[in-house]
Each structure stands twice: as C-alpha cells, then as structure tokens.
Image 1 (spheres, one colour):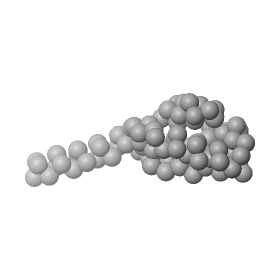
Image 2 (cartoon, helix red, strand yellow):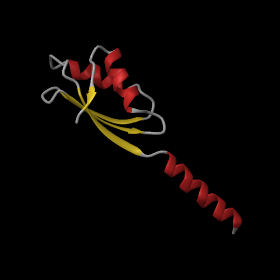
Image 3 (cartoon, one colour):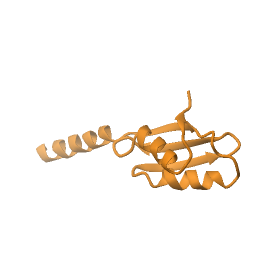
Image 4 (tube, helix red, strand yellow):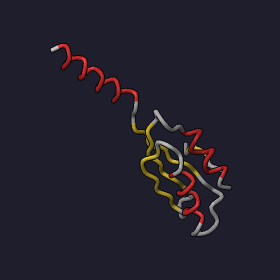
Length: 90
C-alpha cells in the first residue's frame, strides 16, 4: 500500500511540474512566404517545444511548449537569433 501511495504521489508531482503552455508570438519582420519556414525551424529547436504553427498572413507564431523545459524568453530569443524579433501577443 505504501508503495502504491508513493508511486501515485510521484506521478502527481511530475505532472504538476510540467504543464503545457501555449503562447502566440507576433513576428512582424516576416516579409515573404519563406520567412515562416525559418521562424518555425528556430522555434522548433528550443527544447520543450511540442508544436509550432507559423502564419505569414497574420505575422504570428502559435507555440505549445512544456514550461518545465522552455520559456517565452527562450522562444523570443530563438526568433531573434534567427533574424525575426518577436513579442508576446497582447
């Protein structure tokens, strides 16, 4: 019984530490239809990123990531390093 309780508590603790987050980034510097490819590649390289959708028309990237491994700061740094500064959509 103790072992089952301990296993359950560890599973709950692990789930509480890592929560998926979704953020929309404004990426106004995308000037052609090829730019989203570069932005997506840059964001995808950030550890903890699960999904990236980039829209040239909206000049935005919607990113789902594990907040225990990645952060908004790491995502915006990745786009900036690729030549496309971004900000969190407000």
